Length: 376
Image (cartoon, rainbow, N blue to C red; front, top):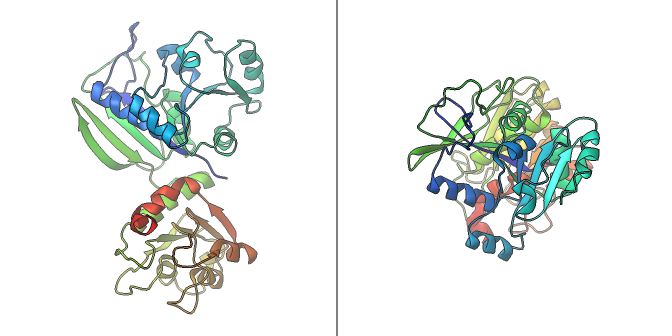
């Protein structure tokens, strides 16, 4: 079930507060960081906030720079990203700036909340998700019905907590401001239950005027994490492995990981690993596992590119190697283009043989990055 790529964005004080308890909004960052946020907004398909954030902050959530809006239009996108709010109760302020600025708006709510929201006369599509709020149903609706591939979540703390807790966040962009709030009644970034089994991985840190931007990705999902969370984690690893490939003008750079049903990593590999300049990623990973290992019968192969169905450099393509190993599930980010092989359909070969093939299109751009020289 494909979801959008979910990017959490927030700014906090040194002691972890989103705001103070004063009547005015506490500004935690400055012009340079506001411009960075504007750039991120311009890059996504939708921006989401909770109804509480609309009540507390009255945000407009716009792309402010005219040149960025023009670039969106030139790409065939709407001038502004879709604006989404989530409310279990449907208790929304029809006078809020959220409804009266920007482009299309969407309210995701419960069946009871939808009845209340429709009576407010707000200019928005109202989508009931059932008797309760279901984040997976919401993300599925955004992806399948609204065409959202990248979703930026700007708050509040409850929304961020739930997405992290359920393993649905792909990235956290956290700005830390050099001040303390120190008021236990003030809102915090993460509420109770927001802790994960593993640590977040720091991808980047950058000084922006007097604040620090830190970009994090979730690490391995803990026991009981959703299949979606596990798939996303291992696909991130596969895409990272692809960046290790020695560059080539005649072959793609691909990363692969083989993972047991209990979440244990069995092996990993990448194209042209070691001294073998012909080896493919899936081939390299499977070669590190003892043939007949009983864990293969319930394992998953994660590959940044669809396993090949035909190749000239080896007797058996990677799709056949996966079938021979008895692996029942394959997750990939990107269907193989016709750059080197016409009508490549490794996924079709696998599916015909009964393998469950899952595609995560939200990782396609990342999988293509080390192959940009072959695609232009």
